[in-house]
Length: 457
Image (cartoon, rainbow, N blue to C red; front, side, top):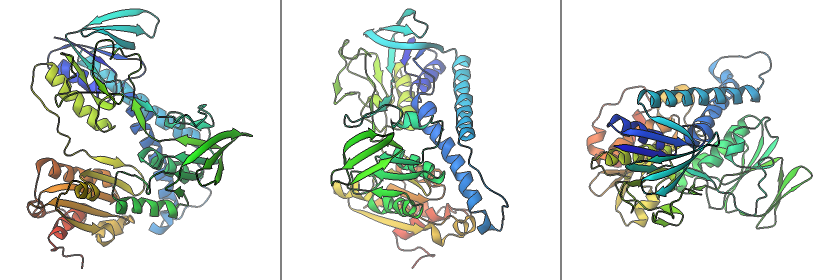
């Protein structure tokens, strides 16, 4: 079986490896670097930079823990960027090693569908190659959305792509969009000394989440002196005298050294040949079923180009399922328990339904909540802002959860499993959690669902 994968991001390279493991002869096409946006200009580099900011913050707070630091603490922005680049390079090499060991043929070039079993590849060296395959998996990812009103130049008006490769730290920065990308970049640059203003059209940061969840992050931003303007909209943007000038709908004018556009991403289907071979799309996304199959037999779609959350771990799961089905298995995707993570301080993580969504669906629910402040471990490490919230349905099955606080993105795994398996709060509450740990907060929130929490009143 010959399988071709177009796109080497977290969905595409995983699909290639899985198909090879199942016995396929696999060709992976990638026009840039394997790992896609996630590894090269997204998840990994942003977390590498946030890790540097976290170290700086720990130094600033060291005195609270009885550690005095004599002398000046300096930020070396260039070294931070070099460390980030080195991390990316190591991980790209790791993926190439895996592909080589699985005998996946990696071609660096741009692939275009010419028939349902044929791909024309414009290789980066200028040559042309035709790839014929029995099955094709499309995984071309997404690109940042840039509204026309912004005079994007990659210098003063930038996206996350340019923000990750700046040579110097900006003195001031306007961030358009208070979603995951905007919040993470906002806090990173703020901790390094940049004056940051976040503009969000919705009534809160992180619009998909419940208001009480977003409020915790807004509190932290206020403490850090990050200016947050919600229910705000930019109607005009210009670059004047080497400064960005943004005019809001209410007439207010903001100026900054740079403006970062982070209003979302859109599927990258340009020149892919989707329409040429008759693949059905809707609102710019490829239509697939729960087996990741398009309407064209033998052609699959995964990741940001289909109607599913723009998340690397979702693309990875979809890639695995597409490869398995391409190789004759019968697997289906299950989107019930998708983890959502924001790597700010405090971290924000959630899974399943929010209270807002449960209400909109007419689901009768109950909730339990426990504040980190009441946990011994949280007090010990000096990280006690936030809470753990668990949502259950009328049958006591856990249908959603949210965590705002220390290591929230790691703690979420236990609750993701609970939502996926439909475990009840009663059963899960019987599990003994180790002491002293942050996981005790999950146990306490589970008990609170039935008003039997011993450490709250």
